Amino acid sequence: MASEMVMPAPMCLIENTGEQLVANQEALKILSAHKNPLVVVAIVGLYRTGKSYLMNKLAGKNKGFSLGSTVQSHTKGIWIWCVPHPKKPNHTLVLLDTEGLGDVEKGNNQNDSWIFALAILLSSTFVYNSMGTINQQAMDQLHYVTELSDRIRAKSSPNANGIEDSADFMSFFPDFVWTLRDFSLDLEVNGLPITADEYLENSLKLKRGTTESDQNFNLPRLCIRKFFPNKKCFIFDRPTHRKKLGQLETLHDNELDSEFVQQTAVFCSYIFSNSKTKTLSGGIKVNGPRLENLVLTYVNAISSGDLPCMENAVLALAQIENAAAVQKAIAHYDQEMSQRVQLPTETLQELLDLHQACEKEAIELFMNSSFKDVDHLFQKDLGAQLEKKRDEFCKQNQQASTDRCSDLLKDIFSPLEEAVKQGVYSKPRGYRLFIQKMQELKTEYLQKPGKGIQAEEVLQEYLKSKESMTDAILQTDQTLTEKEKEIEVERVKAESAQAATKALEEMQIKNQQMMEQKERSYQEHVKQLTEKMERDRIQLLEEQKRTLACKLQEQSQLLKEGFQNESKQLHNEIENLRRNMARPRTVCVIS
Image (tube, rainbow, N blue to C red; front, side, top):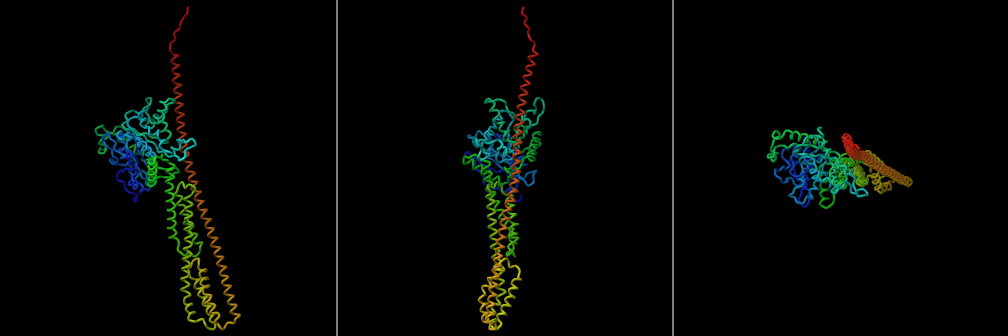
């Protein structure tokens, strides 16, 4: 939390200029600093219905979001307040307060629908705030929910009929909470008490008619039932008498209606305990940078005249995050290699083993940070970069070894070369003394540690460069017969040929080690990709199970309601028949 920028008061996140919606860069900058997972609670409703008061309470404050005390709408656009989550450590609670819907002063209410849609797209819990009871007027005012399929796309390519299944929306829509303010009715049905949740479910029951009136009645209810998998309802008494409503920010709890205070506490406790972390398809938890990108993607889509598409937004976010995941993995590899590798290494295999260990960590880091890597393009890019890094280290290792060996040869053989220049070995039996000294110096060189993989090759190159000097000493030694000189020349040639053969064998071994390392690298990529795909598969199955369970529950509820309606109709028919049978009959006698 120390690295997160403090947000002491709400800020405008999305400005409503009247003509278009514009993201506030300053607010986005602060939002992006919050690296913890986010629980996002958005509230929407008609203006002057007390939305901001509830959001301030969720923030643990009396003041924050503007309440206002007149019939004018105070909040414009969408405002944000990031606060530490009171019950979930290492989580941030993001509160989104929206401008009141249906403000007559706006004239053009086009942006109302977009604000409603954005609140749904950005939140994990969506609170709809209204006054009074859930009646047909309240449903009519919630007409925005019937426009969601015209405002939001779940997938970039709907099915063959161009229609999106409600399950597509269910998979990413937030939980739905309906808050009823100044509620004055008794929660009873047929004289029996019911809960607020049961009141909501009863209010969402459909009519079994096919008339236009029935369809208009059913449409908003059907949308709520199909789009929102989880629904909750809270009722609130009037907080105080009307004249003091404009002073809510300054009133203490003991100055408010006790029932209202208790109801508010229950509401806040539920939100704190039950509101989930904002999660994208695939189980991707949303943090500040991800929410920032979602805001920009959706607002830009609306500004350009397109429909916000959840699938496209996630793919766009994946592009950004996967590119960052590649760079993060490469940075980790560079850091670990710089700490673990001391060039030159004694063998190539030593370097390749260190590379493999750091590569494995880099791939794992990428897999944990990336998502929706279509066709594994970013993983392939990572693999190519790691291979290039490995080759660069091999070149650096080779050069470091060459430099080290060259310096050693210079230090060890410089005195011998100086002695040759002074003619020390240009005398009888000088050649044998020279060869003896060369062998001593070669042994000294070979015993020096830290020469690396080029030790033999650099030595042979040095000896080859001194062949003319050796041959000159040989030819000037008068104690050797011509036959002995020829034998010595052949011996030197044989040693050179033997060294060349050894160098070729070493090169073949190095090539084999490089091929084996490439295969291990490939297998590591495949292994970690397979494990990630299996995790993603399990996550997808869990999401599909949850969506299917919601659909089955909804269908079961519809069937139950249909059965109840038919049962009620049959009961009424039986009662009518009983009344008709019990009615006294008039008997006519014909004489």
